[in-house]
Length: 350
Image (cartoon, rainbow, N blue to C red; front, side, top):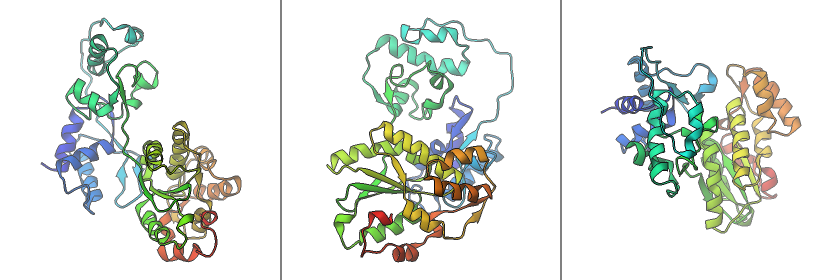
């Protein structure tokens, strides 16, 4: 069975029109133990996405915002299932909802909504105080499919406040942990968005002469950082090595800046310090050659660059408005090594 076959089977079991590509990639990984570590994984996933389109099972995003350009080839952030043909269909009859779900009586529900809600109704009827477990575990218990509830926090009933993950599903998210490396005892962490820059900085910081100046190094893995950043709280506690400063070195493009703002908000809610731009690295990056991409919409740009200090925000706004972006790969290992001077304190250089 190919990656496309496994993705197709997963799509067939979904109740939402839009399916995040991370979920499809997970299905492909689970069917081929060699794929997660394969250097050709992205190409396999890209080919599988194209195959889904050829089979008429998925539609790919239109526009730059729907794609992950952190490595080659680009991968879609989601796929849309083709709309089903309109057929006359009897609507499900009224349900006797448990008190916790009584608000559903005023909501027009689809058959897909009932497929989601009926098992939840039974759970709350029989075990209203069920222990709160991970989403995938509850998903398997209620639907026989650990992926059925993937992305449930974006379902319209959840975003409208009618269905609650903890109160009704008795579940909680289990994001992939942030990849973190304790390089030294200093109370700070630098998070790097992409793998090339992360590997280079790990080499430079791992060989820093004064170990007391070095702290944590984290790998953000693109927009997965938004979900994974709060897991750093547990790592800091387990190692008894808290931080008072979090820095991020990411793409200077619309997606990278929007990811930074959202990760900052999510991290603060989890009790972490503010996620700050690694200004020293960004200033060095701004001296490098930019690459051309389609220009981003100015309203989104203004909001995205607000994560940066005003002087840098203005410069980056002008750059992105002209359809130019900067990626950390433009600041390679030899340049990084030359710019980070071991004779002066490290943190201000970052």
